[in-house]
Image (cartoon, rainbow, N blue to C red):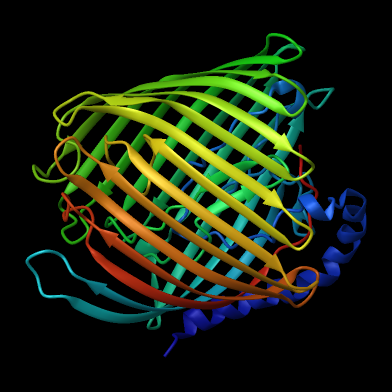
Length: 471
């Protein structure tokens, strides 16, 4: 039975979303002028749950001459919307609010133990809060702070240790007509109880960019923070050079024993060159190098020595027609240390937006964060398909697979599939439902990750006012 506290919280959220439609009506009329071509429209906003991480991966970057400075939306592949929406107080605005009800069945089957199955149900309250302001006489300096908290309620208890949250900060400076600076920070914290039911891959079909969302159930708690400053120089009208010094911090506790602890500090940078061959073709090269320092209480799982991580990738991008985008990359990946390895780095992606459906596929091999700390390279593939059956009904199918390799044994792996349906009730209010399946194998770990599979169903309501995307 849900406690009085959770009932009041749910009533408050429902009151907010039910009062929002009339407030948003005037905003909707202003946004009609920015309606996209049906062939390039992005899918409806997807609920970002605790499985998503702040570190989104972007496909082949567009030169500064064609894209300009913008803040990337938190847990998304696209730019942050320009308009604040109807719930606004000065620089501060509430962009969305969601209430989800979860029904899950989890079976753990770690090696050497008897399989254990458990049924759980819970509720999740989440929202997106944005502080956005432009400075200066020309308003070319931008400050953006994004905050996305979520709270779990299960069996009448509010879990303060499951107050999952992510945040982002972006500051843009146009230092000269050719030189710009963007400082970005992404932070995520996930407690020891979390669910996931979103799409594994976020896509911006107008830009061809993607953002991977993490779906692993575990470790116990995770803290992830990455900060970087990107200097972008327009070498010529068709060539852009950028340099990004970066620093990252990661921390996780054991999946069963929270006394187990793993810390990682990463420092380094990335250099990228992008060149336009034509109006529809781009080539480039990127190099990422960083030194990773680890502190690990376990001698059996996770990185066991400090390491130098390197990725170099030669990329090619092509736009075919108005709504096809293709990206390819090939290079090398390596890391030093006890578990040193080197091999092929690769990427491939395609996005296609039709009048009533969207399709995207993305593959990447290299160093990436999938929800746990590792020094090894990872293969990951994602597929998303969205169908707009009518003005109000949309379905989305998503599938993903990843496998982390080491020099001696296979590493952890995971598989994820979900089917979602969204029914628009008003311009800003929608009813959502879905069913998902997660399978993970903690090969070579079993300390910070557990092997098992989870089936979960969700039903909920989402308030998202229409906004104008800022390019």
